[in-house]
Image (cartoon, rainbow, N blue to C red; front, side, top):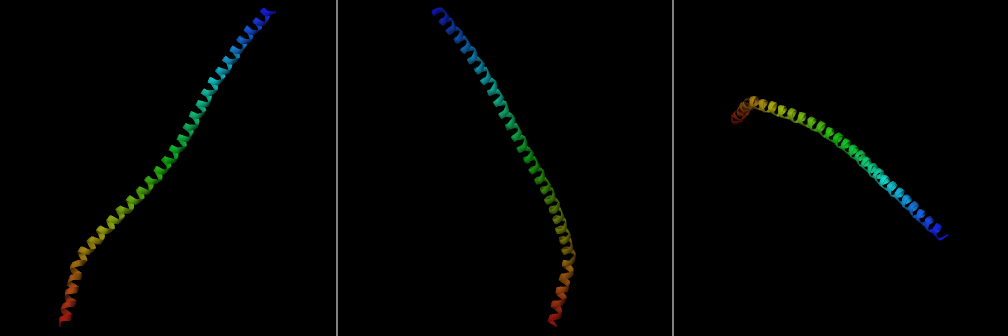
Length: 105
């Protein structure tokens, strides 16, 4: 009976070893699966973040384009005003001179 007990013990040890090995393998597989899941989640979050950043950049680029157009229009208007001032300044000076001359008399 002693031999049979030892045999059972040896078999139990082997069964425990196999069971432990299976558990260890499942743990490794699950850890890899968890790792892959975390990587996928991170990539998904990163993609969503980069999409938001791209959308924000496109909005800013559109705003900058509008601002540049407005600046160009303002520059053109200021040049036109400057040209009008060049044309009108001598006329206005003559009118002012005439007014002053009329006031002297």
